[in-house]
Each structure stands twice: as C-alpha cells, then as structure tokens.
Length: 310
Image 1 (cartoon, rainbow, N blue to C red):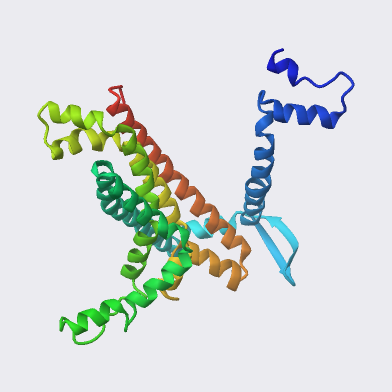
Image 2 (cartoon, one colour):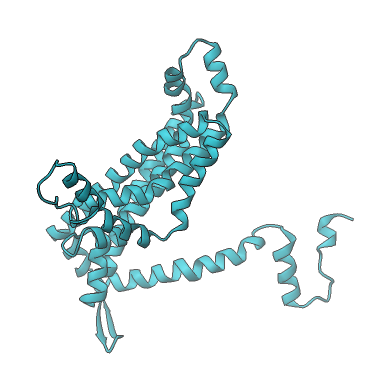
C-alpha cells in the first residue's frame, strides 16, 4: 500500500480530520500551513499595524487611539528633516564598520579552525559559542567595567605610566564600536566555519601538490570558496548592528543617537507613534536595500567561483 493511500481519510471523515490528514501527510503546501499562520500573526499583522500608524495622524488619549486619519506628512517630514539623515547615516556607517571589523577579526579565526587540529577546533568552537550563551546586556555591562574611567583599560595604562589621567572612552563612538564588534563577532565566525568546513582536506592538498604556498592557497582557493560564508555573516552582522538598541544606549550614553534609540525615544518618551512608525519603516527599508546588495554581491562571487558567467 502506497503512502498516499495510507494517509487518505475515510470518505465520511469530518472537516477537522481531513485538515489534520493534509497537515501530517506531507503533500503540497499543507505541512507549512502552521508556520505560515504563526508568521502572519507575529510578523505580517504587526507590520500592517505599523504601516497604518506611519501613514496617518492619530490622536491618543489615555494610551489608546481615539481617532486616525490618512496622512503622508510624517513621511515627508522625515525625508526632509536633517536630523533623520544624520541619524540614519550614523547608524549605517556604524553597522558597516562593525561588519568589516567582524570580518577582519573573524576570518583568521575561521581559517585557523580549518587548518587546526581536533583540540584546536574544539577550543575555537567553545570560545565562539560561549559568548552566545550569555545575554548581550550582560556582555555590554562588562564593557562598562572595562572601558570606564576607573576600568581595566585606564587602570592598566595609568599603572604603566602611559597616561596621567583616565581617557574618556565611555559615551563615545569608539566605545559603541568596540562593544558592537565583540558582541556580534561570533555571528560572523560561525557561518565562515560552516562554509570553510565543506572544502577542507582535498582542495588544500591538491593546491599544495600543484606547488601553491599556504598563502597562495588561502588567496586563490579558500577565500573565493568562502564567499557564501562571508555574505551570510555580513548580512547577519549588518542587520544586528544596524537595528541594535542596547549597545548604543549603554555604551554611547544618553547623547549618542542612532536609528533604534531615536525610535525608542519617539515611541516611549514623546509618544509620537506616527513618527516612530515612519522611522521604523525607513529603518526596515534601508536595511532591506543593503541586504539585497550583499545578496547580489555574494551571488556574483559565488557564480564566479563556480566558473559561470556573472
């Protein structure tokens, strides 16, 4: 008896039994229906509500919307406000710098995992995954202790006689960048390790047999083949860095304004829900544009490594 016959409901089955049979039978789109319903509830519906708030004038009384009228004024004001341009430019530059630094620091770790022995690989995996088991807020507070006026960095520099008074590191762009790189670095390393591990052994031995040095193998073989891992890691790190709120709020201080903190102030403190919605839509749109660019570049380099026309 075939699988299709085994999963067929009896002719007199009720509607619930028919739907349950379609869900568990594994045929067509039915097995994905529960995931689609969850996605609609947790993603699509909130997005529609956000969209409606961004393109309307609302009147709030006692925490509830009492009137709502269609308006594009909030979007036009946001696109013509210099503060928005400066804030999103700062967020974009911060996310790009974080992504590049994570790639710069993460790629050697992934390459060491590729050429290392069994214990080296285990150690790298433990050191990479362990920070992910701790909350990002906890790790950010650790940087408050390290970079503070009497923190580890300033105490060490003063004890060595390199500085006479503590450096102002906290509440600066550099403190935010340091915290972002450390927190998001594992997200870059893991995709690189996953992609590099597919091509270990044979390709490196073949390259060595053909006379290539280890550096030449890295440049001509490993680096091109790791393009999918670079693209995946860059997309993840950029998304997390561009939309982050905790790190800039804690390490940048109250005067450091990026897109996420601006949205938080508009929604929570100013109660300007329409402005916050428009800012959120701009944030998602610009993030999506950068992700599309990363995907296109990754696709081009992946096709090139496979010898296809770009």
